[in-house]
Amino acid sequence: MQNVIHRISHTFLTSMILACLLATAALAQQPYFTPAAYHKASLSLVSDIPIVHLYGTPAEMGEQHGQLLASQIQTLTTDYIDKWLEAPGQLPTKQVILQLAIDMESAIPQVFREEMHAISRAANVSYDDILLMNTVFDIKKSVQCSTMVAYGSATHNGQLLFARNLEFAPLDVAHHYGVVFVYHPKQGHEFVSVGYPGLVGVLSGMNDAGLAEAIMEVQGYGASIKAAPYAMVFRQVLQECATTSEAITLLQQASHSTANNLMLADAYGNARVAELTPITIGLRRPDHHLLFATNHFRSPALWQNNDCSRYRTMQSFALSHYGRLDVPAMQRLLLQVARLDRTLQSMVFIPQTRELYIAMGMLPAAAGRFVHLAPSHWRFKLPGHTEKQ
Image (cartoon, rainbow, N blue to C red; front, side, top):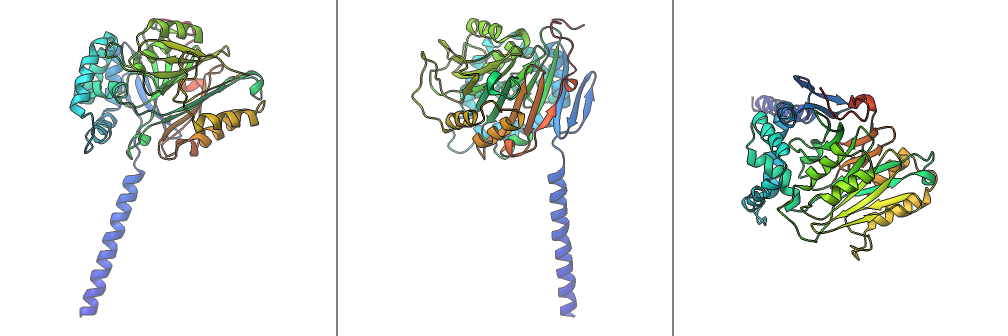
């Protein structure tokens, strides 16, 4: 009898363990995004890459953003931002950072405040949390990235290619929640922003005119709470400018919260790195149709004597593949310079044709499959349309 009981107990325990494993596997397979629609706005999946289309005024786009991505915004608030800022021994504390964010709010353009308020209401997340999400990287440096532009004689067909890795701490969360936003604002250029639920600024993006950009944070040079968050300034670049030269003019007229490199390239084959600080701007031009940037300033006016292995690797790779650089080569380059535990998004922009190859959802992102997104995915109107009815 005891043997029978033992066999029954063993079978029951095995069944329970198997059921738990199956439930865990099912949970792991649950998608982080599911297709949805809200009025004209939509969330769709292209080979597991979430694409969110937003339309109208800032308040309308904020409402659509919050409605379509409410659960993801809530998760990032509690499981990422809070986890990051409330870690034991964390300095400055979340409350200190929030107070700095509140102090910074008056420098944020009204249209972006309206958009953040709309996201907050629609996603049922406090406005303080949305404000914090959109200012924290200006206050607490964390992003570490790599970019490279090649064109002309450096590429196999002369076409400009813009490669980019976005890197910061995943905390076992962030790499699952990347989103490709497509903004169709009532005024200004339509544009693509590769970001995260809850963010209204741009970290990496391209507009309907073929202007592309990507940020890389730089340490030092102080900070200013009298300037808008850098990602919002960079969103203004995409929404208001069509060329690299126009973008530089806007950047020269804007105030800057903190030090950043901004890689810029346009559909006409023009590329620059804008080295930005709260008090000055340095510019770098391509050399032999190649331009590289990581997290240090290298212009004569702002030179930092810092060695960077990622920068050297990009240089070496580009020279060894000179004249043969194409999209697959740029993807291999991104994998070579990826940080295994921090590369959340990897992408290659082709400004002339408004194409994007993007990988995200795993660590490092560049080790995953790059999904090709064509202009048909953006639903852009013809460049030059500055107002949408």
